[in-house]
Length: 430
Image 1 (tube, rainbow, N blue to C red):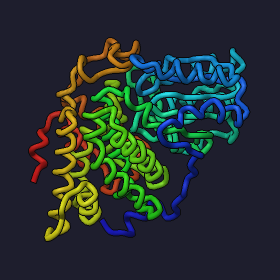
Image 2 (tube, one colour):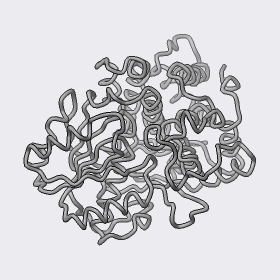
Image 3 (cartoon, one colour):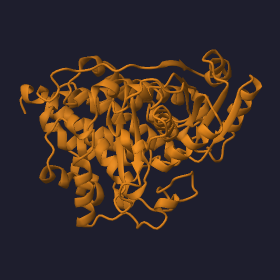
């Protein structure tokens, strides 16, 4: 594909804003004072509940100590659903709150961002805002986002992702809304809060970071201000994810991944994404699987799909992944980037294809409590042809797909999806 064809859909590129951020060990102790400075009086705390930790309790009590009134909504689900958002909006209005604090990973932050948009539009259904800058009121309640995982970077991006379960309950649809009005007021990233994140989720969130970093580096947007951050986030992930996964209370690994996820989000915030994310959104819509897990399984297949378009960029990714590319051609180095990604996936213990994912081990919603009500009667993951077809069609309609460097059609994307369900990663190793 020629350069002019790559740039044709995006002749004007837009740099999107970031929120103010406080980062580092102990940053979460500033939530109360910062909330008061921002004028919070009665705040709605949105979270999954973070079962197995006392993180939410400690933060809520700290906010109360500083004089804030707190209303707790701890029913956010993984891959947040439209009803999670609307239930929070109802509680926010009935309790006469004036602000939001989200605690958790991307699910809590995304649901909270959606709730703010809905509140600003008199409680309209969040599904009305799918797409790009669909909100009409640029002002919505202030929001402090407190991350407890190194993954989505939602606390610093202009995107939020919601699963629409109501428009067609037989065909749930996970969509991305990009909206400058959804950007948080303050991001707080404290690696100490990551210590309680389970091993599997740490690994999966880490591959969310690798997807966030690598996709803008090869994106069709070809946006130079994003590329340095993208490459550095790949470097940090390759250096720190293994330690963060297997030595979870070692600060160096957790802090390294904290910066990796934050920087990667800054890269995709304006540099775009691709079909790693489109496949992930589709699989989550069908099976409610973890977004980072989906990204991890899709990533090697999508890298292999896209490499013929941009061997030079993938050669750069190889160096960032720690590969000594001295003496290699660009094609050889690109192949080694793929090999390094597969090695990382295996080193942190992530399933290698979707049909390896089991209900007991990885299809989760609330930290081991099983599927949410909407998905409790859904079938196990299937690699059957009709499932592959349906997921491929979902991918083609996803907002991230236009940023993919290689042209996407049903005929070209379906084999990628099929391999992610039924193929062997050894097929991709050079």
